[in-house]
Length: 146
Image (tube, rainbow, N blue to C red):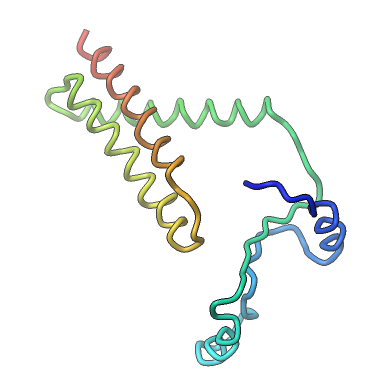
């Protein structure tokens, strides 16, 4: 995410022009045929485009966001433990590599694919897919073998 000095101007200009939701500009209206869509997008090729996530009001609920993040992390580790329970043998190395594989599956099928389509940087997501999953796998490999 980047800062722009024009944010107040942009927010004021967009006020009342959009409903809450996500937009990609330019875009053809729903129901447009493929042929019409190609004609419509031709003049935009090589020109600027944007994505907008528009919300009616800013909400800052750090506590709830952290709680939801914790629940997702807990469920994810529970699922990983369930998966490890299906292995005949588990050691630190195999647990760590398996956990990294799970993290990479999530990265490749979500973050990386989105970075291809929307031309975004996914390196921070790749780091998030490897480091925490490697640490979790190493710890679980040790813990489950005690």
